[in-house]
Image (cartoon, rainbow, N blue to C red; front, side):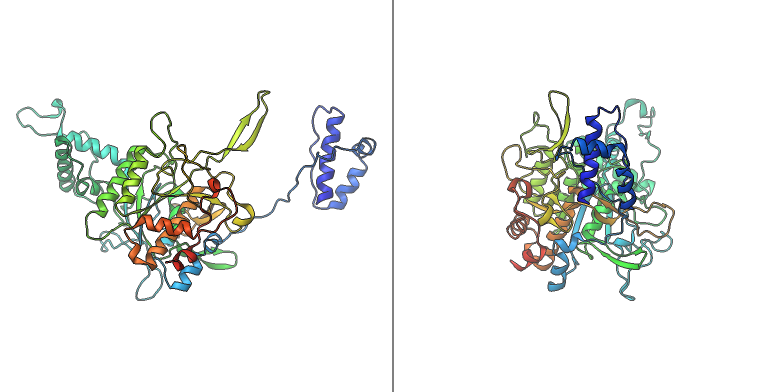
Length: 497
């Protein structure tokens, strides 16, 4: 191929030397002999013999290869499979919340195992008439993209406009026709809205036992609202997928980091992938409330595969509302893992107007700037030592000079579960490839969950979990503000305790 690269480069150089109005497109034929013979008969060959080309005028030529399905090479790269096998753990008993666009609970990746058959259940959920049982490891789903609307409705209940009060009856008439959640009767929904409204009117912190049921999406066949954006399903699959995917050679196992982990679907982004900090803050507070309801922690960790650009004029780095909320959650015993962001690449413009791609640093995004959480950058899916930190991965330090990211994990061409292209299909086992630190963070979430599954004494001590994962990471030999402490190593982390 070297002679072909030199040949193509020389041809383009020769065309420039002759001041051609337009470069002649060159087609690389699979039959190299035909290509060579045709070229040697052309005018360009004589031009090059008289005026040798500049040795720097070499262009890379690649063959158009056919793609094949890659079954999660990234999990072995983190040694999660080795850790599961050596210590006989699979994430059973661990629970993680995924803040994202939503997890498709119908997907086969998240099915529970039937105790009778030792196989995954054939269906994800039942109809209400059949009993309404949930056969997925997606424990509950909450739609926080509707949080603002529900809050407004509750406020209207507590403080109705004067024109909504029927004269002589003092009865509120709601303008909203469909305020009832699908899993609640009209009487129950109105009661909960009234209770939430009372809390808002008196200035007390919102009672999540009131507002939570309004945001809950029932796991009932015929009532379940499936997500319309695949990002969250992909992220959740990296953490906990466990199913067989069809390929030309037959079915093959597709296993994420923790194949038996329980998941909470916390939807903070809509079908277009749009969301705001307000809803995220509400969801973070909801998790704090959930974990305060019992003696033990209900949700052991959360995964935040999204980015909020830090507004430097408004807040100090790491002191934005979302960063403060994340630090508070960690202080109360919950592991928080976040993507570093995909701001590592930049387009630069010279004074002459010439544009060129390059790299930039000091661009970790929120909530990755939060001190206490685990911030994750991206590397190659199975050859991290060779390719190092991904070009798109945000680089440190933070704006106030702290070391970030904390770790790197696979984030390039990651195959995982996704929403089926055929929304009406009864078979939900589709997969797709995605790139980004959004894919890296769930690898570390899975690593943390496996560590907790083996060493239960670490539950409620996220600071120690972070220390262990960072101290046992594999050094890739890259700049510390690029790789942090290095590539996450699940087996070494578990063995170190």
